[in-house]
Amino acid sequence: MAAARLAGNRRREQNPAYGLLRPIFPGESVTQQEGWLAAVSAASEEYRQLPPHLSIRVGELVAEIYLLKESFQRIAAKVDADGACARCGGLCCRHGKHHFSAVDLLAYLATGRELFTPDFAHQICPYLSFRGCLMEPGLRPFNCIIFLCDQLEGQLCEEARGELLTLEQELRRLYLCLELLLGNRFANGLLITWERAVSSGKGLFNY
Ligand code: SF4
Ligand code: SF4
Picture 1 (cartoon, rainbow, N blue to C red):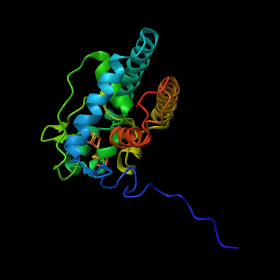
Picture 2 (picture 1 turned 90 degrees about the vertical axis):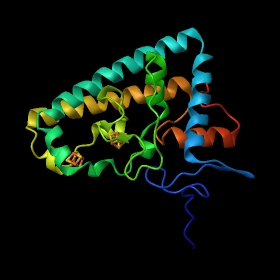
Picture 3 (picture 1 turned 120 degrees about the vertical axis):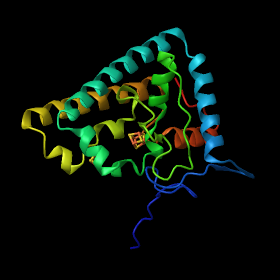
Picture 4 (picture 1 turned 180 degrees about the vertical axis):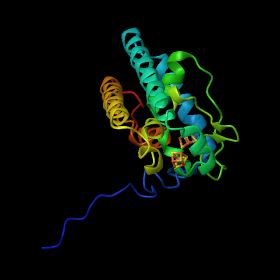
């Protein structure tokens, strides 16, 4: 019997985490920069229209997420992450484009923080500047915050590893809470989530 064909990624969509995203709609093609602006604009508008009880809850969740990410970074920094990362030049940032999710955008919207301007022509990551990541640790994408390469992880004591694991689990739980609250999956990154919302005719937030 022939093996069932796997659905795989959608047509014209590369690996969601690492591929080249160029949103394509019937008869229309937009650049990534345009896609970013459209996605941010759509999410901002939908955020503004959230009923008060939901926007309050979103605010509470992103505030918790911010603190957990800061804590994660404080522990990771104990192993001279800054020095090692500066020497390494940011190898792990090479595929960051789709790490920024709708949840990460919500953190900016709910706290009223000014959003950065990505550069999709950047060779490494659109959110990287000559001074490092455009986002402070508390606002950085989940994948970026929890990633520790072998070099850094090897320097951590067992206690610190345990603390990081607990923080990661809690972060996962809070990201899931936001997905359940707003009726969508956000793990694929803002650009892909937005493209799918447009294709399906639904909003980014479906509550
Ligand atoms: S976490 Fe590791 S791979 Fe990433 S920048 Fe730092 S040293 Fe380099
Ligand atoms: S978002 Fe920031 S931390 Fe993440 S890959 Fe890009 S530059 Fe690196």
